[in-house]
Image 1 (cartoon, protein in one colour):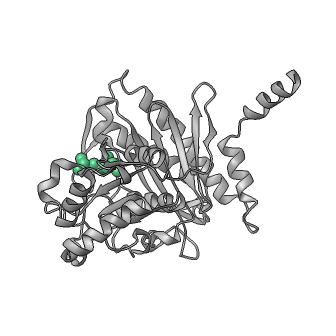
Image 2 (cartoon, helix red, strand yellow; image 1 turned 60 degrees about the vertical axis):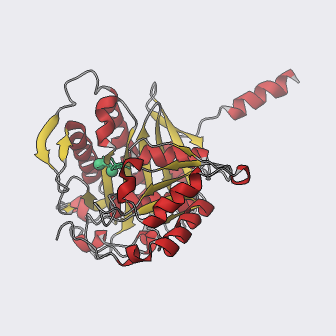
Image 3 (tube, rainbow, N blue to C red; image 1 turned 135 degrees about the vertical axis):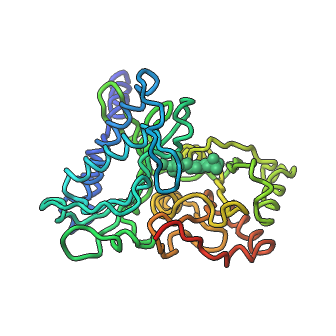
Length: 358
Ligand code: AHG
Ligand code: MN
Ligand code: MN
């Protein structure tokens, strides 16, 4: 008996690292030669470097703004720049990725060297998500999306990045929170790894993540209520009504970092909404490096992601920094808001795209 117990303990505490896990997963793809495995590990490495810098942010004078503005006209924080540089440098050196689209760069960064030009993949990235939360020590993140390149050879192209989300090979995020986690999917479920800071290794802590059925959280910036479409107003009203059978009223949680809001909702069960508003007719979040990767994860966790009318993953992006409204979470919750959007705000579906850039 004594012996059995101690054996159980050993089994239970056997650690599986991110590196081991991606290598094991690779064997499920018969023609894989390890390129995606190396790319995912490169992202894990860059994330650890960024994590170290974020942890030290309160100690050093790194929090001020650099003074430059990014393509959306927002002032860049130093950590945005640091994270962007770290991911770009790591992926350029890794040789598996031939081009990157980043929130912080107006144009596609196309790698012009012999090794990287041979890379089979392109990456869209939000290097630092939730940057308004940096100064207050609130969770922030990184979001990434990986596609197979479409061009045959040479430096990766703009068109390589403009693929619909259904073409994603892998996607995920890193959350720099009370602990740091990397959560990703390659289309066979969602798995979460927690960073053990003492040894610097991501360990499998959340295998096969699924939205729980019994959640009752909603996340939306209600400060903008007056600008919301009627369908969203009705949905929020519905969530606030009392009905014990459907666990209403729901509880409201909003951090203001998409990664952190989505992560909590994935674990606890909840819907995230960033609708089109009168001020932002296409919503705020960007298709390539916010909506699509989150949508891929949501679907792989048994949920849904919609712009209110269509599946996010099927929208063909036209420009690099294009925005889309985002409703994502457990299926039933997303279907309810879609129903109310169809009934009360059908005109929103045909809002012309406001071009953010050429
Ligand atoms: P980023 O820091 O990459 O610009 O992203 C911020 C995004 C997203 O993380 C969050 O969900 C949303 O902005 C919050 O916007 P509001 O402040 O308008 O609610
Ligand atoms: Mn973001
Ligand atoms: Mn960002």
